[in-house]
Image (cartoon, rainbow, N blue to C red; front, side, top):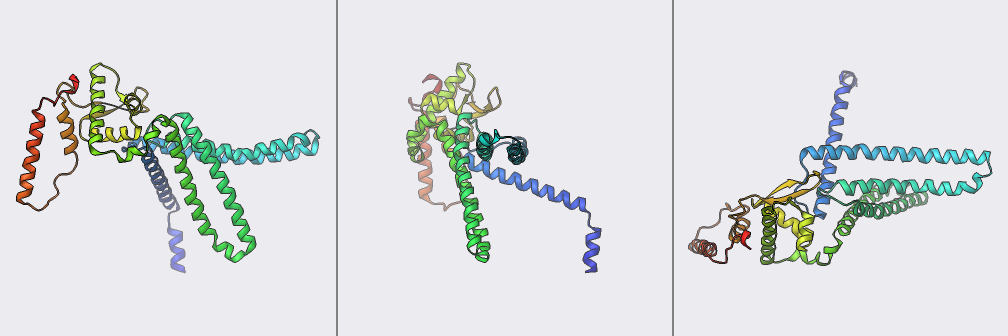
Length: 339
């Protein structure tokens, strides 16, 4: 016991507090990073935020959320107390008191709608329209409030039914509530995506199963659009602009742009407002041919895995090289500029 007391007395409280704050900050950043990754997956965005943008955006969310919660809680208590005090001193509150109480009960909904709208607008690494984020925030926020009401009442019923077993059920119920809450938040992200891309949502299910040949065709069409757009001296195109111009589902466009970027065919830049990614050719547009696009996409990735060396492997490899040479020298291998 003496040793323990000496350790506690000699421990530097400031250092422990500092370490705790660092761990807490890292944990929050990690959680927000996982949330962004999930939202990016819904929007089919392959590239996350930069470290600098993560720090600024996540810090904003960490500062905004507690402020909304504190203001809402304080406002709720203040209005309730004011109504009770006014009802004792005036008959007019007998008529308006119930309406104000309903308004007070509406505050938590307004809070969760606001928070979720901000999250749906900020978390995906793309531009989300306000209307899409607001619709998702209202629907998901309402479902969360209903879930919370059911969770609290069910917990109270269990505790009243049996105090011992009711307390044992608290942890499983909490985990179930957290799980369903997260599913509702992801459902809201899907709603925001569907609302913003409703015109292309008809073929959304088919977009997950397109053939490699058709995907190659769409990649060439996308590359051709970017080359022609650059040749005319226009601004770099965003994902939404490409999707609208070619009438291709936006998830397919994002996948194609990511693969073209990884293959070195196109480069990523920012719009004038710095809010969205835009794309333009990364090579001399006067030299980009159909074969260049196909070859770059085919060779993108790892090709150094060791396999069994055989005569069949050599023959097949040589045949593929000859196929590429034939395509490269073919009259059908046109410059994208000339199409």
